[in-house]
Image (cartoon, rainbow, N blue to C red):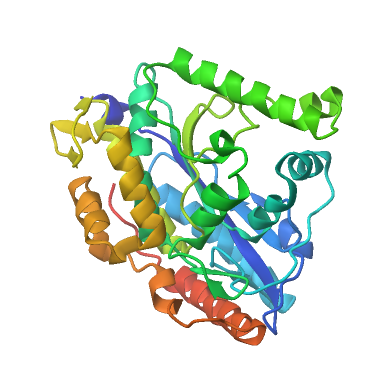
Length: 370
């Protein structure tokens, strides 16, 4: 019996949604945080995060995520609120922080560019680390980072068309441009010790930048450690004993669960397949997982952000890496191409997609196979 058959690899999801009122305006979650286990406030006022516990199967993950979202939606209906699965608010001027020392330190380090982060809503997928295969897991998820294209859900920032994957551009190329090692995708690692050294170097850089910005060391150390001071999209998380993929946009729950299922399936194959880094094309088969050289991965990632599934190279790459690209319908390609979107049109889009999320939760109950 294989390892993953006897001991299923656990996976979990954290997904963020914009909260709106019945006119499509951004509002605070309020009592929605009490509607379900795993519902929490985020660092900006109008975001609600919904988390699952670690689950052994996709069926279990789907059931728990949908149950929790459904509980929040029931409470939201009573309060005339909605949840919006768009990666940005489309067009909104100021998104306010919730007061915290952690956010204040980030603002001082990053400066005015931190504003870009406030307009982003995403999904985090955690997969349980497998002893002895942690680096293969990390490197595989780095190579799979272009799969963010499968759930790109907004091309807009403050009403203008920024990129097919606007959130990824805001994070990687705009918010953290001054501290690129903090927010961009890191190269493959050779072993866990190398990963740890990278974290420590980046933490030292962050502490230095924070002190230079006028933050006292005690405040920095009470709010950040080497693991929590970086925002690179793929991370080994000692805290949760997982590999975390932070790149996907928020999206419809059915699409997010499908993506998590495919990621977990690839990680399960690592238990038995030969893994190597070679060439520019990449492929996943029953017997081997070939990861492209990192420079090639970056080319695919950049195309995934700029063009998404409109890129033939991205589509072909994801198919070779085992994804059923046709099963995904990224919202960004539906709502893009409108030129400038006014604030009123943005409110209408938020209302429309809040309704679409409700339909997705109430209709998409069939369980995918594991």
